[in-house]
Amino acid sequence: MSEIKAIIVDDEQHCIDALQAMLQKKCPEVTVLAGVNSVEEARRVIDELAPDLVFLDVEMPHQNGFELLKQYDRIQFDVIFTTAYEQYALKAIKFNALDYLLKPFSVQDLQEALRKFQERRAEKGTDPAIAPLEVFLQNMKTMQQSNRKIALPTINGLVFMPVQNIVRCESTGNYTKLFFTDRKQLLVSKPLKEFEELLTDVDFFRVHNSHLINLQQMESYIQGEGGFALMSDGTQVEVSRRRKADFLKKAMQF
Image 1 (cartoon, one colour):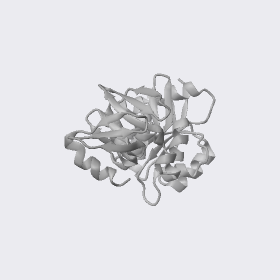
Image 2 (tube, one colour; image 1 turned 60 degrees about the vertical axis):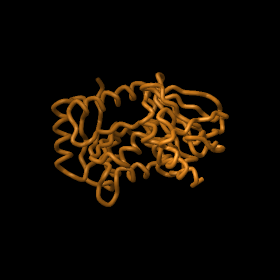
Image 3 (cartoon, helix red, strand yellow; image 1 turned 120 degrees about the vertical axis):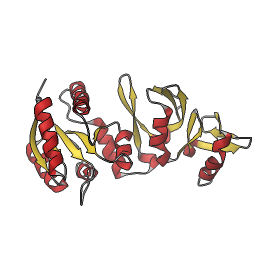
Image 4 (cartoon, one colour; image 1 turned 90 degrees about the vertical axis):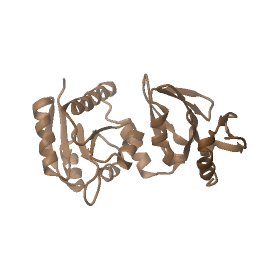
């Protein structure tokens, strides 16, 4: 296993010390080049030492970890986020299929994140471009739905799809089938609930236990006990009776 040159960015020194000790004891393939406490210091150390991997705390005083990444037009390193927060920060990370460690994390969590990093690095070979991070940067710089992309895992890797191109998502057990504006479909090994959590903030609404729709792609609503949403691809998606009131309230915003 090849050496991984890493730095740790965390405003709490005891977190840096704990992670460094864990890496030295259980992950000898990782060489920690430095541990720093601020975004400003992290930028200087990254530019100077050119690490392969950055363990990056999300919430820090003055500037957070996301703001560090915004300073780069092109990222030459990979990132494993470390965070104690499960709300906005974690949702943004998951949206782009990036790795994260939720504090407090175990040795097994750390080793699993490193395993995925190694696999991704082996697949990329000598190409320094890190696609999920590149897309993450684009999304962070422009939060409008029309410009955001979501990472969709497939058997061949990741597909980055503009959110506006998704018409609807349909549950098929532990999988979700996505329908796109070009009439193509994609089956993804994630339950519909995960897509609901990720996409509700970008104008998606779960109208039925089995259906999540893009309100931007809805052409009309047909009255009924629950009613039906007529989508841009010609499909009629049932609106459940118990979700009807919330759906109509949301739909009236468009």
